[in-house]
Amino acid sequence: MNSNFEYIPYGKQDISPQDIEAVVGVLQSSFLTQGPQVPLFEASIKQAVQAKYALAVNSATSALHIACLALGVGKGDVVWTSPITFVATANCALFCGASINFVDIDPITYNLCAHKLEQKLIDTKKMGGVLPKLVIPVHLCGQSCEMEKIHTLSQEYGFSIIEDASHAIGGKYQGQPVGNCQYSDITVFSFHPVKIVTTAEGGVATTNNKNLLAKMELLRSHGITRDEALMTEESHGPWFYQQIDLGFNYRMTELQAALGVSQMMRLDEFVAKRNDLANRYDSLLDNLPLTLPMQDSEVHSARHLYVIRLQLNKLNKTHRQVFEELRAGGIGVNLHYIPLPMQPFYKRLGYETKNYPQSELYYQEAISIPLFYQMLESEQDRIVDMMRDVIK
Ligand SMILES: *Cc1c(COP(=O)(O)O)cnc(C)c1O
Image (cartoon, rainbow, N blue to C red):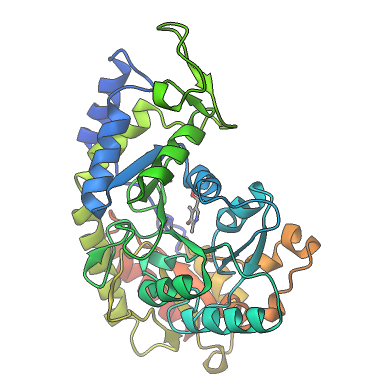
């Protein structure tokens, strides 16, 4: 079927000549790591998202890990998140010795449902269960969760908040940039190549809390400090450093940071183009037996993903058939995500997807169709035509 056409991936980075120049410049410089580019990248994120502090690390997974540790998550604690996310969002709690639990998604936005969160908090408290130490809302597809409501609940029930904004750099909530941490302790971004801005591999944690920044900074690099104010004894000399905590090597390289600095100059352009393409999908796919993404009026999505849901009762094909036929037609569709409780690792721990009916239903109907900065309107037309063909 259309084998003369090129395969259209669901996501793809856009590397400009300036990006290449920036990375080559680092290779020709004295620092491949721990030089000037990482602080420059951090400054560009801070400025873009209007947070006081930003800390760059080697992945969003690392950022989630040290963010949890900085917030004191440990043994005996419970962390809550959405079942519809990448595995790293839940794994970070387990890295710290805590356990994870899930709050089902909202059927319209597919984000962790703030209303169900409230109900689960009420029920847990009533039954004398363990309330969460931390909740990690995930801004799925680039659309912010209802952060004001979640923040209000955090004050009532005493939990911390990390926003997993891996999909949402350049997005807005109530007119303010995602990542400014107005309603959270820490926000985490990913710069994996399929995300909106890339550093090849990379992550950033933003916060307005100086102590959280200091803890994460220490954990990023082995728990080692050269700051005499933090040392337990007087310096032995100019070589002196102390390990005062158990940290990791989660540092970002200069090559990655230089790419990030260069990419961040095009953030607005990236997000605007994604929105244009998404709006175009909205009109081209209208009138088909599909549920298209709904935008919350308080949110300006960064449009990381365009997820459609099949209205299966109006089709004479299965979800799998539609998916396979699109793939066979050269369309790089994908599914974000398999509900976490369905993963063998989490199943072994006793989680059951049937406890999250909206997530289960989402998984039966959802397909991510290609959306990336370089996508041509002609490619988009081909995707829409193929979709029409497959589901007619
Ligand atoms: C990509 C992603 C991550 C992990 O990001 P890495 O930078 O690859 O570690 C975490 N959470 C979500 C929601 C993601 O999409």
